[in-house]
Image (cartoon, rainbow, N blue to C red; front, side, top):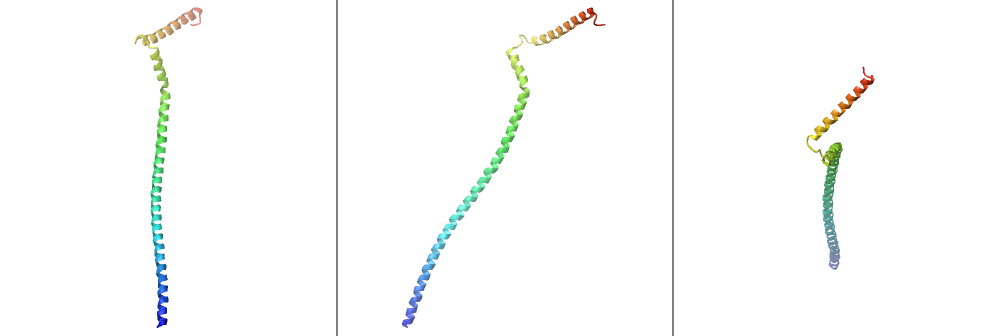
Amino acid sequence: MDNMIHEKSTVEIKMDFIQKDIEEIRGSLSDFTDSMKDISKAITKIAVQEERVTSICTRLDKAELSCESAWTFIRNIKIECNKRQQHVDWAAEQQKNPPQQPESWWDEKIGKGTEKIFWGTVIAVIAYAVGKLP
């Protein structure tokens, strides 16, 4: 019977060690589970940040295209302004030296035309007199 009591105590001691080992394993598993939860949260946060970065990149691409079209529009306006600059310069000159009367512009054109006709007639008369014209 002593032998049996002695065997039980050995079995009980072994069981105590096994229970301690099981508790240590449970503790390690609990730590491991907590670590896995933290890693899972970190991975989720990384995925969210990656989605945000992708969204920002997409918006930047759209902004670049919009900027390019805006610059094209601005370039077209500049080209059109350069084409019209001579008219602006003429108008500025007219503002600096306005005609005395509204009719003076018309009078100036008629005067130049009359002058050309007069000198053309004078040259024709001189040429006829010299005998150059038949």
